[in-house]
Length: 184
Image (cartoon, rainbow, N blue to C red; front, side, top):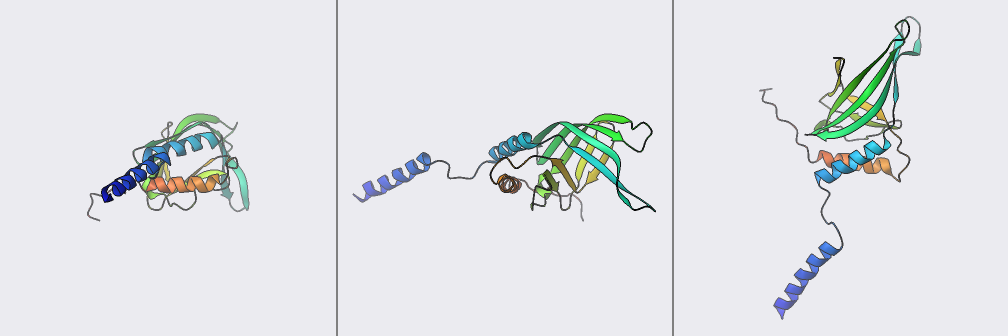
């Protein structure tokens, strides 16, 4: 009799687990897929204006260049978020406002994201603590920064920003910090 009760309890528990859905957390692949779907859905072509401070005049808003992004694509490669885009740059400091076009690749290390907030003024916003974000252009320009933002429209889904933050922080749990081979 006791064996029947124990057996029935085990079978009932297994059936409940299967019948009532997922009891474990999403996998890394499921999390990446959800994030890519949302980023690709809500990214919007952006215009980023470079500003400069001219001395001795106090002119904080003089536009020096404008970058227009198009064909923006996201992917996860190894432990990095990669953003690729085509860029059209208009340089207002040169005669005739010359326009150049190039492709851009932004590499964001997932392990070093600060994890606080992935949105800033209607933009996906990624900032790192110790490691730099790499920005490589097809025209040979290379730079590093501690933050990168790309415009998005996030007001379409209920509590989207909170859910996106939660998913990004969950994904970070799968990523290990690289180990240095140096002494210090």
